[in-house]
Image 1 (tube, one colour):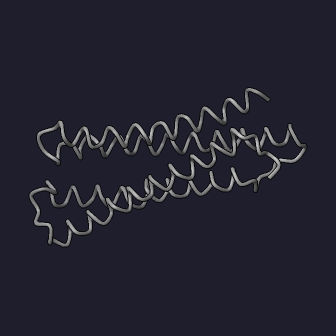
Image 2 (image 1 turned 30 degrees about the vertical axis):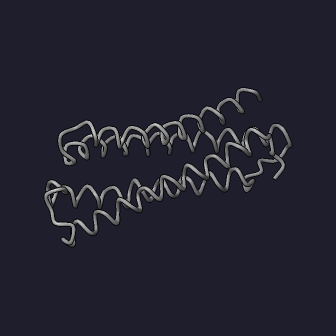
Length: 159
């Protein structure tokens, strides 16, 4: 059972640690590289990697959580708060990976260097709006992940 709790906590550490690291890395890359277009070319694939890390971590967490609850209480507690919140995190990550990110990539490809496009251009307005949604989704995943971490660390496996 300790190994299952270890997997649960490790999956959260990987996912949340990745988000926190990305939040520090992205602005640093934009400051360090000579153009925003180049920085975006570095950050975009890293965001995709972050999403895949989160999706795998979420699946590992859910499988471990359900197995742990089944062993500890005799019931899988599929709808325990930690599992429901984790499913929401997975959903938000899927929306970001397969909804928001591809649209941002398509806009970057079609208009080239975003910084060279007037801020009133409809494509740039759309890109900026998508970027804001991408950020909101990551923040929501982080906040929910912190709640799941608390629930997991507090060993509240009966609800």
